[in-house]
Image (cartoon, rainbow, N blue to C red; front, side, top):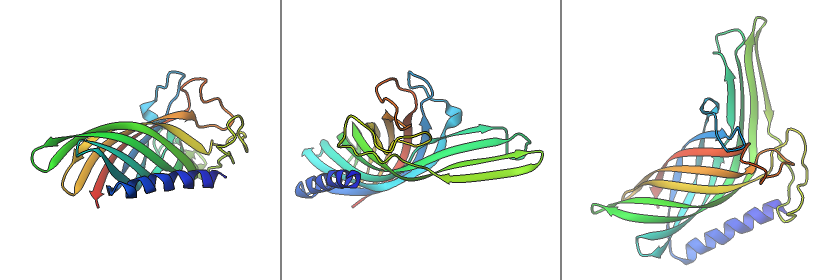
Length: 230
């Protein structure tokens, strides 16, 4: 059911883009991912994890060249890391969690011309995402030598149509579905788009947890992206 839900959402967004005779862009870039560490949603910059995103973004004009709806489908990495010491030191320890999601953003974007061919744009909107892969990695060094451990991330078998419960929840399991809000700004040229995006997660990572309890343990992702217009 979870794949049916996500697939139907994607098809609806794709159909809206085609029917509006929209343009689009292939985009890819760098993610600086983190996870909030307190009830107010603060992050620890030392925990930032470098990962990536790639995908397609549509552009459905709503008011000429000045207002657009931009649905998309992205393969995007999130997560965070914990590190103590340096790799050549005894006592060194590093643990990373890097889940990957199929994400559907839906942003409303305002554009303003800069010269004859370039535009400044800014926008915001919601996103939904489904976890499909990822790794938890641990490495370190002791007086006895180095060690490494790698394990696939386990996601819950949550069915989003059952709103009052979460199937497959358990210790060490991430929630299958993430959702939140996007903000984006950048420069759009004749064929290339340069932008910065920020994803504010509203769903807790750990399965069985209450999303509305506080803003701790939620995704925070800063993305730097390059798009090539189709």
